[in-house]
Image 1 (tube, rainbow, N blue to C red):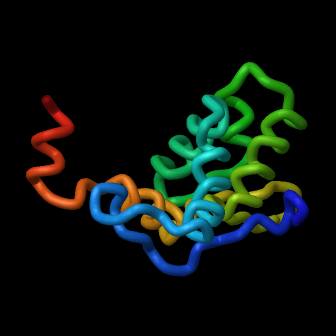
Image 2 (image 1 turned 90 degrees about the horizontal axis):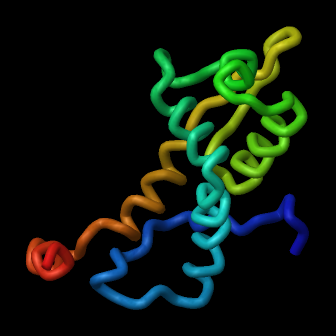
Length: 123
């Protein structure tokens, strides 16, 4: 499988506290978590998600970092290949937005199965 053909999980899986992930669920979710494991990509994701209107221009993203535009483009490409963001070219600029379904899959996995599980985790 090439980097451009990363698997996307269509259905949400049970929280980790409920049932173990199947091999295919783990393979589908791993690229999402791998993509956000980098501090620059995590920050990019946050900037896009918090931007007014739910989308942002690449010009606003590059200004927020002390990195070259090609480096920012690389990180955005990784996030897009993982299915966390999508984009559209408008004239000379590219606009990015979050894919809420991808974040929901990640969130569902990390959501405690019950309050009892959450209480145990806090201790």
